[in-house]
Length: 408
Image 1 (cartoon, rainbow, N blue to C red):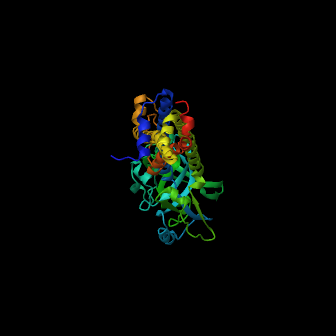
Image 2 (cartoon, rainbow, N blue to C red):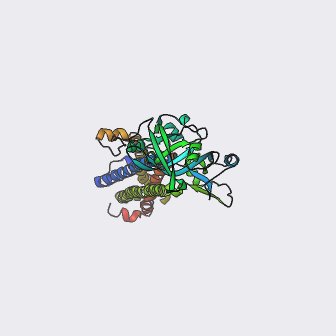
Image 3 (tube, rainbow, N blue to C red):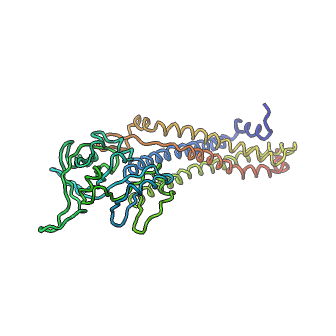
């Protein structure tokens, strides 16, 4: 098979046994550094991506991603308002909701909660619907005064299915001869859900008309229209609807924005720190390439004497030096994908448990591979390796045959 001369000699230099064993060791060490850096980047960032996706699904999938309301927190014509909002790009569904805070009291404990009055036929939170392991949304019917609560909240209240609890809401307070009396009503627990996040500690679901009676508004009124997006992060780029003078639009950034900003900052810092590992390995390639050029001075001088141009010599040492980075990046990418895919099996084999669920058992590390991110890491490592060879290759092209062969 025909090879260009620079490619042929460059690859030959990568395979040849050098007299200087230290140069060979530094070259091998730089390849290993690139491999470890790429492996660490892919593994750690894949786990971080998994954590971010878990948070997005288990938190933003359960809470209102955006809510359209007004100053009075009462919307009477929600049926007419809802239809045009469904045509907005990125919006998956728009549902009427009654959202307010309250206190829930059982015979054993008392706890502050947020309740959502929903119409089961409109409810679009897939993560909550799929996590209901006792009961169903169909049991939330008007005037039944049934509720579905989170597993953690049920444990705090020490309640089981069929038991009654009292909900006390500050909204709907009335003046009586005894003073202000909050609105309160008994509800029956008919189901539990387990989303796997803090939502389980405070969210209570009930029928919208029962919630309306609790806060003393009309049964055909709601406090807002809840938006569900194809992706919760679409709220960062969507075009919101035009609002009337007294209307307000809030989204998850006002309640959970700091959490996801912290996660993003942590990902960026980890990315930066691990990129420094790859950069250090690239400097090792620079060192080993400089040593190779010094070691091959006589051979370079002979090649120039035979008529080889400086450009061809540059390509020889670029290929020879970049080869370590290319091999390291490819091996690191494959090993990183393999390790991140089976990270939980590896952790189990080593006897390490970094996460624990509410019941005290071990939880699996979430992993999410982003192809674009992996390609950027792999080709970025190759590019750094290539850049590290430019100066040694430039020096090889400037070798003077007379000076190099003077003492040969």
